[in-house]
Length: 334
Image (cartoon, rainbow, N blue to C red; front, top):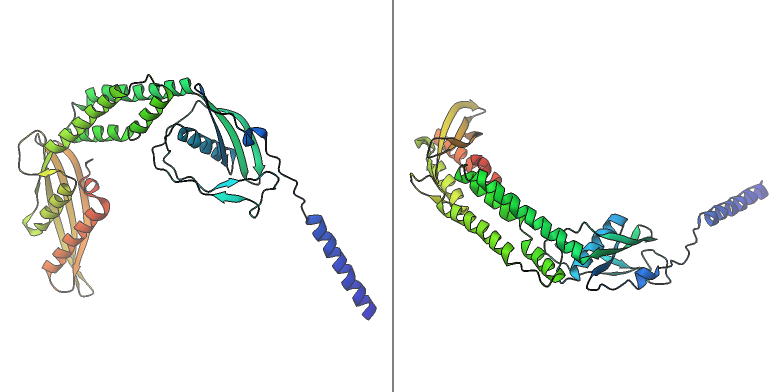
């Protein structure tokens, strides 16, 4: 019996060792392609760039970022830790050397007309690509994109000028935001073509900015509230002033009137005074046209008096503005 137990134990040991040897994976030496080790150099006509990533798509994005960096323009993205695979090593976490690229914060420039010349899987979840971009084609694509954006805005201006000043203001704000990376794009275009003169685009942008700033200075608001909730007036006005709008009484066409109506239903529960309050807010232009309307349902409460419960309503109204913003509370785009 003892002999049988020893035999069984030895058999199990040899069996497990056999299974372990079958599971062992032999990793062969990772051979890196010549284009990866010695990529072609960019010249006056063509840009070349190597990129790496966990998949092909990420490698392409990395290559595009690096390509724009060669034009002395950084891309608005944080370079992730890049794995540098040494010649003669297989890929794993212990053999790889990690270096951190410097984080840069510049608006991304889209490059769509690139060519993928080479692509290779370097190791587990690691890819490398070699991209090429024709400088002339890239310049023309960027210029065409800018021309189209500015021309579209010029056409839309003809329509928006017939709308109320708040709609016009929102239009110019959105237009300026669409050119958030204009400076960087012009620098890239200048680097691609020395004969390119960016002043025309800068002038067009400045005209949009000037109109937006003029509207911001001229638009004004006035606020009326019921006497029982007179504190709402100061809260609304303060929120408007914080967004740099003028608060005054005026009959100018750039002026808007904000009025509020309050409906309160009182009840008691578990020793508390409850004020079920609906605050209706309406914004009108000087012609009486409603440009924004909203209704807020707030329950104020107090264990003591009606006035304390009313103050609780005011406090909750202010919290809503602080959280949601005055634009959302008024339901107007400012």
